[in-house]
Image (cartoon, rainbow, N blue to C red):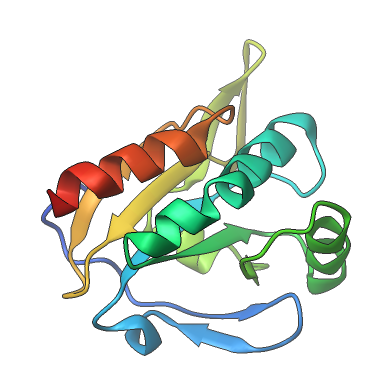
Length: 158
């Protein structure tokens, strides 16, 4: 299943725990812009580039009134280590059963070096203060993704 959500759609609700066991619900962020990004694995080259790109653009992202939430199906311990190692200033949410990833279309078939596998599809959703999707990256590019998201946030608020 590929990402089928589009800008204008209502973002699927979610309740997930972060690396420290704190619960995050989409409803908790009502009135804020949320950058929800799905990534395959903690501490792998592409995912590290992507996470560090968000980290490096955090001041600009926050200046646009947005929060960043990373999601993978890694466990809390893996998230804690990844977050600490790269000093990531945003929560990493555990979607161990991939239910939330599946609802967003971020879990499904993908081409991995010519082989079709089922796994996390690197994708990002900018959710507006009203809970509707403002921007969707169906296959995000890991390198400099934070820059692309910040540029989009600035365009959306212009």
